[in-house]
Image 1 (spheres, rainbow, N blue to C red):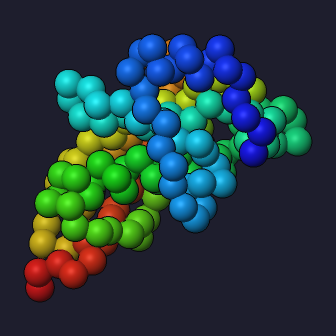
Image 2 (image 1 turned 90 degrees about the vertical axis):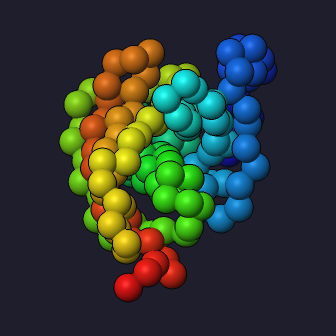
Length: 144
């Protein structure tokens, strides 16, 4: 990944966003930014050329990866920091995003059982929805 423009990075930091160093796939689509908000956590990625599809818009796979990561992290926290994996992810693409856009994912827990967490979330740019989605997460090591 190329480094984001220094002015964008400083702007994000001034707004309270923190850059996270992650391993594995999340490192490849990042860097990932997090912000603790009144109603929970927000997760962000600054769109770069590497995130684009051949038509010049942010690739749907990049958008769904951000949503999947955010919903999984939100579920993890809200179900007692128990690991979980995605068993289903549904997405509706509403608008396009471009290089330089700061993509923000937010989500909520709809319902939790002993072994599943049902999630809903949105990826937006400046509060304009880009992607809506829902997920079912399997809680690992869950009570039977």
